[in-house]
Each structure stands twice: as C-alpha cells, then as structure tokens.
Length: 489
Image (cartoon, rainbow, N blue to C red; front, side, top):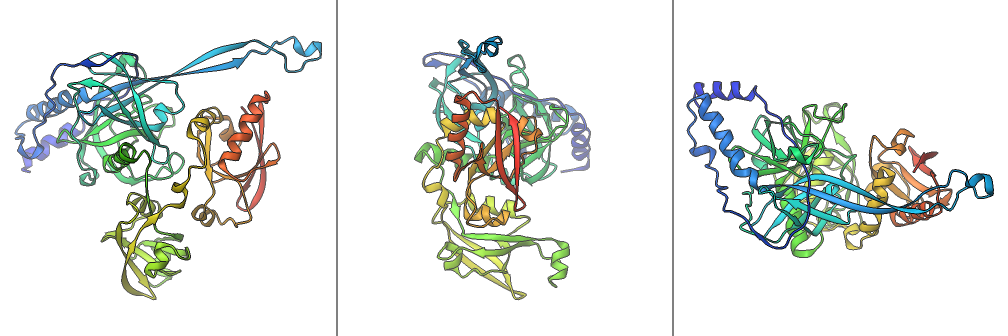
C-alpha cells in the first residue's frame, strides 16, 4: 500500500460512525426482491482518494445490510397480584388474582445461508414463547429455533423465505488488531434497525468469563449498544467475521469497547447444531496449575517462555494416554503459541472429539512435542439441566449456574467432597450481584437445603418461587470458606 493510501486510511479511521440493533412478527412463506450482495474483494479495489475509500465503505454497507435482521421476542408469564389488605385478615400472603405479564425483547441476527439459517446470540432468544424476524424489506416472519449453545452464547434460527439475501462468511483468523470493520444491527429500538457503525479491531483473544464459559472474543471500537447483540461484524471484503455479543460499559451504553464472537467459532457451533442438534467439544483431560508469566518464567529459569503449567492429568484421559505429565509446561498448540489458559481451553473445545492435536511442551527444561487424540467432554454426554426450564429462572435471578466437574474443582481448589453448583454468569445490575454473589461461587444449599447439581438448584428455586418467597437464601463456598447470601427475587 503506497503512502497516499495509508494517509487516506489514517484520516478515514479517525472519522467513526455509530452502530446498533433491533426486533419482529408473523407471516407465511414470502418472496423477496433480488439483492446484490456481492462485494468486490479489497485486494481488487483501487483506493486513490478519500472519496474512493468512502465509496468502498458505502458499497460494503449497502450490500451486506440486507443480510442483517431485527429479532423480536415475546414471553408471557402469569403473576399473582397480592392483596395489600390481606395481612389484616389472617392471610399474610393473600390470595390475589392472577394476571398475564408480557415481556418483550429486541436483538439482531445475520442471515448466513440461502436456506434461511440465521446466526444470533443465545441471550437474545433465551426463554421466549415467540421469536419473530424483521427482514431488511420490512417483512416480518416467524422464526424456528434450531438450537442453542449457552456456553458460547450462540443460537441458530431458520426462516422460510424465498430469495433471502445471505452474507458471505469470512475467516476471522485473518483479523488483526487495527483491521477495519463495520458493525450492523438494531441498537436500542426497532426504529434504529440496520444501523451501521465503523471502527477497527482493538484486540483479539479477549475472555469474558462472567458471560460465557468459552470465549475468544474480538474487541472492537465500532459502536455497539443494547439491541446490537447478534448482529454482524464485517471486514473490508464485505464478509462476516463476527457476531456482535457484548459491551464493556460504565454507563450501559457505548463506551467504545464492544465484543464479537469470531465467525470461525460461531460457524462451527452452528454446523453442529444443524447437523447433530448438539455441540460436541474436544476434551484433553488435564487441569491447569497456573499460567507462566514473565515473573514465573524467570523463577523457573525459562527465559521469556509463556504457557500453562499442567497441574493434574486425568487418569486414563486423552492427555494421560499421550504421555502428558504433571508440571509439564504447554507452550504451543498445533504450532501456535499459547497466550493464556482461557485461550488454550477454548482452542481445545473448538476441536472435535477424535481430532489429533500436537502440543509443544517443556519438561525438565527440555523441549518436546506430544500428539494427542482428543476425547469427548464428559459433561457433553448427558445434559444435566433442561434449558427451557432454567433460562427463565436465570433471567429472574440475574445469574446462572452449571454442574461442578473435575476441571472446575481443580480451578477453584475444591475437593470431591463438596457438592453443589458453580455460578458461571452474574448480571452486574441484578440483586444477587449487589448482595455479593460472584462468578466462581459454589452454591451448596438453597434455603439451607443441600443441593448436589445445577438441576437441584433450579428445582429448589422453582419451589421457592411457587411458594411465594420474595427473598432467597444461598449458602456458598468461596475461597474454601462458607458464606451466606440473601437477595430479593
């Protein structure tokens, strides 16, 4: 790229536009007009002036916008109205009448195939009675839920529409910090549907442990606001490279720090859900003893090495069969250096059972490599919680839990004698968070009744709600100490 073009990109990158997302209703099969969604590759596009650069961005936005949709959801609940005078007549709770309450939601999605498959976020459609999609043409259609994966916050929908405009899927591995991107979605309200914002990739490989168990997020400063969830992150080739998912904000709005799920991960999850109805993940069978940072590397006499220390190897597991040992330091996966435990764990989970990987390790200060055939994650074999029954409770509680397994026990230094459910996501605006509940807390009792699994937890919460309880008492383990947290439902 010559100096003139670099200067043009430098000026243009300083002029950022805003972006966002929105929602929908009903219809039979419809036929849409033909859309030209073919975007000229960046390699073939000549940029000789600021106007050429502007025209190229406009062309990308115009040709990809029709593939972005607004998703609206509806959930109907029955609530009991409390009689305020009943306490004076011997009935402290009252026998108030029951009324329906309708909750509506808004988000975005991206059409990724001519068959009508749509990628969005799980949290956009979780625990809803009705999902509708509003197309770029303004038509509203019912959407079929194909499947969800809460651990990566991905959901797949399908609509029955002829001539549907699908976006071309790109390769998120090619994105680097500084890459130019567009974000398209429906921020804040339906009236702002198909908002386009422009920015750069701020960083790669971000982990959002309070939101999803697995993550390798793309960070961007392209404006993202509530409602943008599930929308498109697009590169300069006009290809989909990410599904916008979350923001980091002190105000609740755009602070220039947004996160998108890489399309390579999202597409893999989507294909599993479409083909098998569930997601299968690779399993290594080792548990970390910590990350090797600069200080630890110096203390171990390893120079500038980075990686993760093997804390424990599961007997008979894939790592054990391959010869991995405690205190080995894993420094690379298939030739790629390891930057953190989160990124390593996510990379393993992105593989399929039966895939063969190569680990670069250091043992006794000697470099070695091990070939490992991955197994299937134990928790994937049997679902411990009915997702339809738990998602509504998660919304009301402001947090979600999952079963304890060997990996989590090792990370939290919890013995096998502790039974319960671990908190894997907490809404910072919720009552439970305000009262002190945090990700990684292990709930061992609800209302002082012992639980042994996530299913037990949700069952006890449902019982408490049905009994009309307004406050919930949890017994938790944090840092090997027992604590109590009470919060309003």
